[in-house]
Length: 439
Image (cartoon, rainbow, N blue to C red):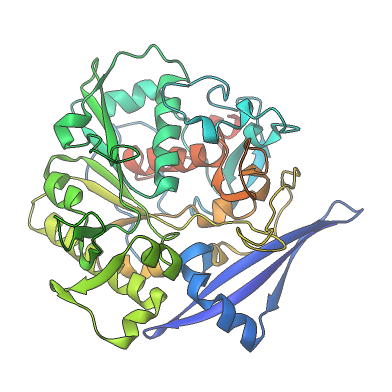
């Protein structure tokens, strides 16, 4: 039997309760799998609270919201996404059609630090060979030609942290089939994405596929907030972290976007905020209220304000974009944290049914922020929950500790993009048990 032990952390934010989990997996002889929930002690909750909401996958009650998609609708007679089907509830199944691109190729788009095929000490690559199968429907087959046809003369942007960058790189590899000969123009400078003096890299990249005039953008914004230097002439200045307004890049370019995928979460902890010299502001003023010292509260406040701003842009016809907030992708540190010996070097792909309901794999802060808005949820938390073997782990050369946050590519983020593909283009119904189930 394979046993997953999930430790739940309860945190009260405003009037809602959210739960976060840490999971560990053990194997037994009968091949079954079950999940055990184990509450934390008061001291453990206190110790874990600053990082619980920011750096773990989150679980909570499902909230009601509309899944209707306003634009980029499917063509008449095509496969459509069934509104009554929750794509987030399902299982991972073996597929001879995976991976969707070669992990030792796609070097033009895929960073070497995430290309696990290039890591000589990794013992197997089974993590590449699984697809996600929802229980009551099927995801459309990802088709790059269909994608480009629907995205002709359009712009898709990813804005978020390094996990968002992984999703961007995954999509670029999926669109090109891992080949490096695509006719693509670097248009980063058009969007102000240039490397500044002293910077490690530019804040993002933008590429245009010439045949269909389709532009794909990635912009780095770990918090999604507008971050501005307090003293531009001081190289050691602190930065105003404006919780109530989105990154300036979003403010400036939202009007020309057709689709926008946002994510944040893993940088919402005291270590990251203090390390980046971010100082929280609201209404242009330094925050002095004690409640903002609770990072979970601050993240909840900020996401709610930013989603409300985005909703206002939609309502006032200032953007045509479909906007998605991707839920938090879970970390899988077992037997410790990232800096205390935490591990994720399990090689067993979990394919058995799990004793966890779809409501458990949620990001309650993101869901709460979206309520009442026209911003949509791209829920990947439950899908990713049981794929602890698909992280970089200990196999990247010369790294300290194990990386149980980032994912191997090809891998789990490819499925996030398959779900995005379905949500963007097939918003009505997917016929039950059609030929897609054999993908």
